Length: 189
Image 1 (cartoon, helix red, strand yellow):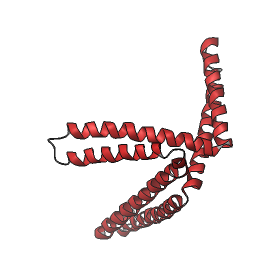
Image 2 (cartoon, helix red, strand yellow):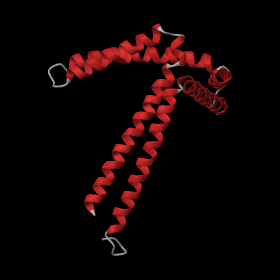
Image 3 (spheres, one colour):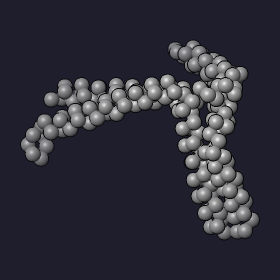
Image 4 (spheres, one colour):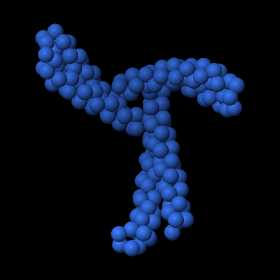
């Protein structure tokens, strides 16, 4: 029982929160499908967001360079900050080129991550399920190679599709957590 003497208030609040989580998840699933359906638009948006973040980071680095305490470290930090600003502005001004760079970075990441995952799977070999880790690593390496071999064409779809899939699965996860919370709140009532 709570302060008002009603045991139903926390359950009602839990159901509302679960409903909000389910609604948020549904919105994310819709956005995920839209992102997968329009991967170039999604990829360009990602490139512009990354460019904006790089510009902001560069501006902060330039501002902080004046607080470095010494002329040598301050100048180096300021130069790196200015380079970050220029790189970010280039990404914002030419998002398709930025998207191409992000695609190559993503391909390289998948290949390296997949190789480490393969070795991790092989190290897990006596444990149950080690094959899934190995399989996941092989698929990740193959995806990286696919993106790399199709570059620059993969720049038009890879980042957007992968971001869309991530948003879609995040939404589905939110729906499942919300449904479980709603069920637990109903059982508590």
